[in-house]
Length: 368
Image 1 (cartoon, rainbow, N blue to C red):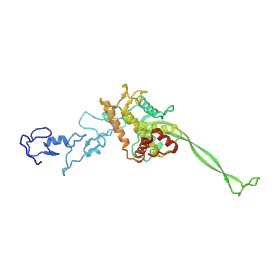
Image 2: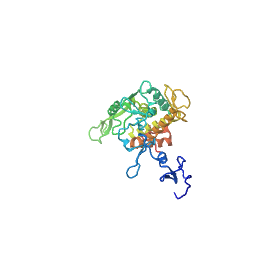
Image 3: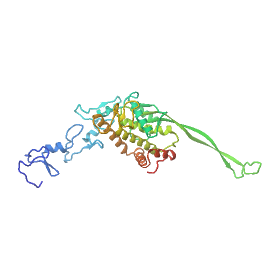
Image 4: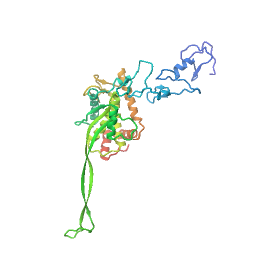
């Protein structure tokens, strides 16, 4: 270290006690007891609650959750350690705190996510559906008076429905929501005049004969949205984001006038609405009662509020909103991730109403 101390002055920067041992650790030119240095700076596994040991080369290898920052041993990535289905955090071992609960279909939830889990279609889902629909109305995108029924279903049933619909065919990520709709098509025969240049029939006036060619044209006459389906057991914010996404699919079909959109355009709009709803929920909270406001600020009854966290529930809601928004923004897929970024850029420049109007008229996003 290039400096000299009296024996009683050479103290640990961690515990402030004298360092009497012949070996010690340093960091940024400051000395520490080895034990203090380990407690302060050595990575500790969030799962097994022990300091991660160095390998034979002296390197300490560990993994870090990309959002939560939790540090864990590399072995836990594939040794069967359970991950929360809501927030992706790993389950801690050997402690009664932060133990996971298990849903009937085998998915695990941490305490934080289980505390707001949307389980039942009859009691949990309607207030959240009201909140999302009120948010759409505040953006001049009402689903009423033809609001589709909402069903919370297990993963297996959702997968079966998705296979029938075929909308997510080729997608590798797990499907958590679905808008089930029918497209009504009509086939008509058009007769187009065809002047045959004098060859063939002619009329009594001596003009060249006219013929007709026929063609069959298929047109979309409208849509029926049969249901909006969301995976049950997700935490409130995650379920609301998926519901907002699927409601955008429903809105595009119920509003009418939209051409058949490329998946990247439609999924980008759906992800945009999901992100905007999550950001609104982070600011104003989410109603847990029927008819509760979505875009207002105050009110205590039945709300999971996010601003200025002052309680465990509020801090949890704010943390989940941040996590879900980050998942939407950092999606690397072409259709969902790039689609969201293109839609968000258009929204930031033109506004939401102008974006949807342009898509309805042209089938494409306006230039950013």
